[in-house]
Length: 68
Image (cartoon, rainbow, N blue to C red; front, side, top):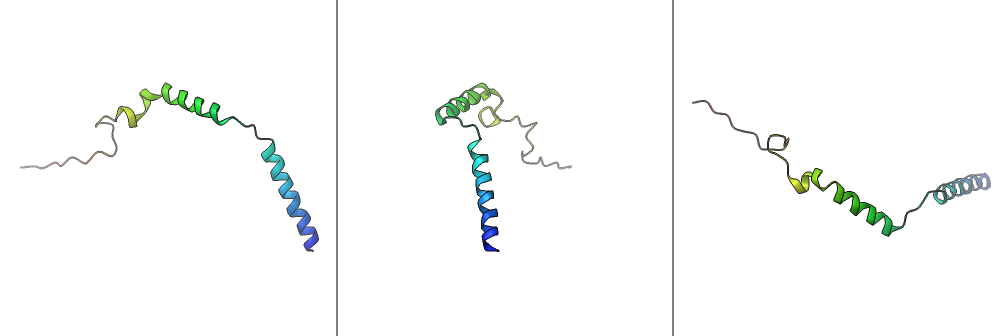
């Protein structure tokens, strides 16, 4: 029983290794350049850099309304 389970386990390992070997790879330098270009192209849409207007900010402190 342990021999057949060992064969099944090894087949799963081989299948996983084949899957990982077939994945297309990108050089780190190319990925970094692409990421930098994407960030620079979208800098105007980034709320962390441009800020959020108080009217559209869902996390703004609630306004206190008091009647006299």
